[in-house]
Length: 209
Image (cartoon, rainbow, N blue to C red; front, side, top):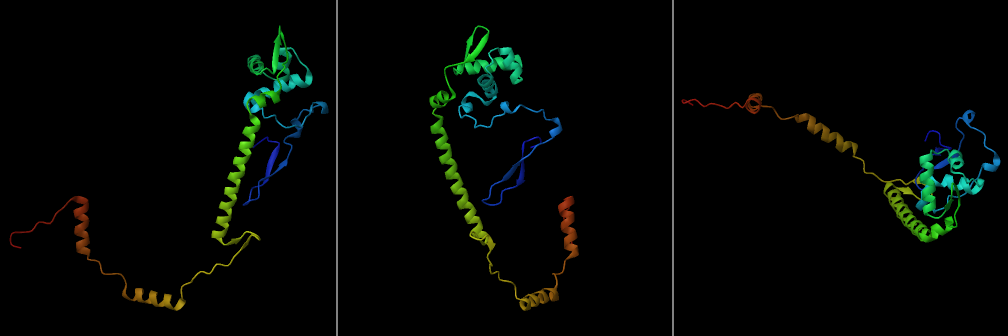
């Protein structure tokens, strides 16, 4: 994808996965960000229920302590309408509480939301399903390699015996076919059949014949 921070450097081959590399696109147009504002962390599974589009506002409130809705909208680069919808959603889950014209973090945590929706069980079921599907995929690949004559341990091709035509017999067959040629064509009968088919003509038989 254009503008993505990662680039595909090697597509998958058989059981080998895709390989990606981190990249920087257009460094001249990148605005420097203070190091204290940079965080690398996992995305909490609770956002799959809440909505990932609301995560930026919640994290902005968590790490900066902003309480004014206008400041939060500006910091998250959201319109007032989008910001209001996000705060309303977060308040519905109890992650945010309102007090007059200010907002603050609520008493409910992301772990509480995940536990209420049994996301640990959902994740375990998903992992088990992926493992079953991957095992079936590996079996299918092994079958394809076997049919193609590939040795899975080495990835080398195995010689498969193919019966080739005997040159002497092939030459005799061609000589017999070319000696006789195609059967003769009755041009008159072919012309009558063509006129009958295209124009709907029919043969008239005279009284004296």
